[in-house]
Image (tube, rainbow, N blue to C red; front, side, top):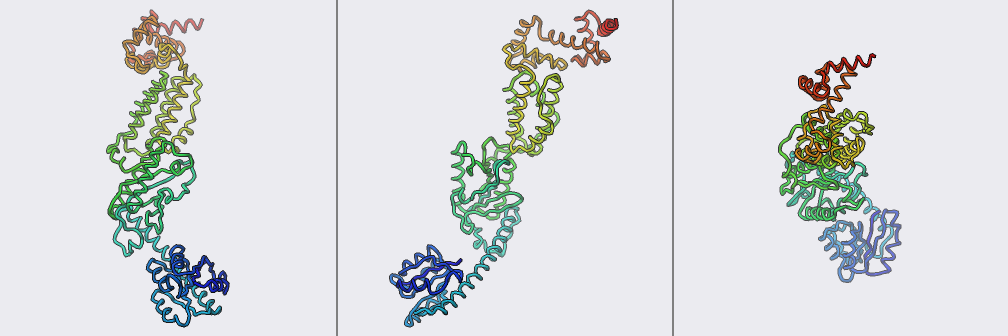
Length: 520
């Protein structure tokens, strides 16, 4: 529906014009009226009606002055001049201001209907042309933006001013929803920045390669974005459901040349890839952070897996949740400083968890540990947006294992050490290695162990190993050197010496005696 303003200083004429024809049937609705030239000009400039019926002689400003000033200020609508016979020369002058039609008073119904019908056709045609041109320009702008982002921009035949692409400064930002569990972002970016964006004069928006991209244009838009960032940083915990809580934004550097926009875009893309390393409730990443990113890449190797799985399993067995968390925190920092992709890091963390699980299961196969199935772990790790979420899940699993394998409330540290020895006797056991796991230096721990157990640490480990070797000799068909290796002695001669010291006979003699006894 098109809008119409009726401007005449005589009330009776305004009322007559309202009802002389059925305006709705021609696609028009009367949006207002004016009784003098100044009022008419104000209505035209503030409401921009599609059609104005304008008396040429009115108080304060004549119809001719109204048209002249309205055109100067950009009004593009249709105007029908209403005049008396004596005003005909003035009416002709109005043609210079784009007035196509004039009507002499009194108005004839058929003549008005004919003109209004023609006006409606013109407006409809112009609207179609405008839509076609806007669509054409939008596609042109979209192609230009793609070229700018991909560093393939060349001078075009398009008028960049008409496309609102000229500015003194530009900045690219990419945004997406903060969490995969949230719905798509549905708010207005103009509202977020608190700017108007008529004709895209403040920013352009484009979907490109599954990215939602904003190109900020000009000092004002960039200043408003900086204000937005300031508001975000002042809010320690954004209200749930607010725009601050629902989005993640990565923004590149600001540039002064159109041909340098790709630099800002590449910054934002790189940062968006780094969102995996963000902290909890962090919703923005800026180009400043690129200055602190690593240049090298360390290998996520089998050796690194072994190193961290051994550390974690040792602290789990020592019931040290704090130390487990410290190890995972150190690993987080190490991974953050790498250039490995989130996908590669997720795979590394999955492998690490499965290795810890396998080692714990081997050591505590008689304990009822509610491990998550491997498939569930893989699924859970892969669907996480952030590394800290994976670390949190890893910590929770380690705490679950600690609760399952023993009593973490032991007041006597020696009980915990004995528990550890009984599950690790087959490894290279040294007091110097074990003491830090339990928060002691080896000298002090050796003294309290000797006092509590009535023997030194090494003697106790030997006693456990000999007891385990006796079980193997009695019930297994292993060779003596294989038994020695199973219980932690890599040198079979040393095993012979220790066994004879404790049992006053060799391993072979013990096996023969034990089997003869079982057959009687």
